[in-house]
Image 1 (spheres, rainbow, N blue to C red):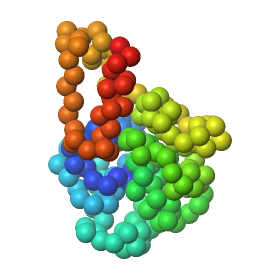
Image 2 (image 1 turned 120 degrees about the vertical axis):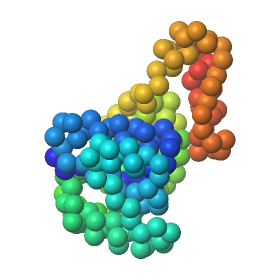
Image 3 (image 1 turned 90 degrees about the vertical axis):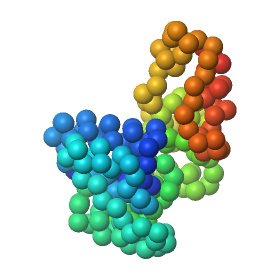
Image 4 (image 1 turned 60 degrees about the vertical axis):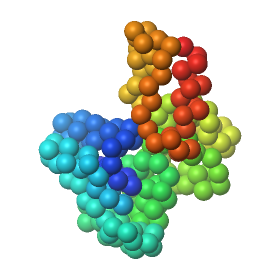
Length: 196
């Protein structure tokens, strides 16, 4: 199968690490895998290249219109069976650039920005929605949970709270790595840990 992941960048972070790890496993299972970066390559691009993953950087510092045109050409050339987008902006730009409506689009939601009219409209046109936690799915809109629930699935994001914190030797302490901004949603992490 020919799979194209569309991300903002491969800068160091949870989403980006997830994409690289998933692409490595897909490659090991004999799939053709390409990662398309919309903004910058980032420090994890080198790790992707070490695992024989193709990484493409679209036009750096371009407008959304220019990125859509470039992405459309790239998708036409690659002719993927599946376009796997990660988070909001790559999803929206991929929907506009999608050269063939028979191709499947999967969107993995890594962050908490899963509400609003744009998400709801986009969700109608994609084949599968993957949430990286049950809390993220529950934080999504009523429309997503109830009317599009059949499109949703939930996976764990690689950090098993019960093993990492609840049963670990550092129980009661929290170590979080991430930018202190709303996108990282530290409040959601604290609510999750509170259940331990």
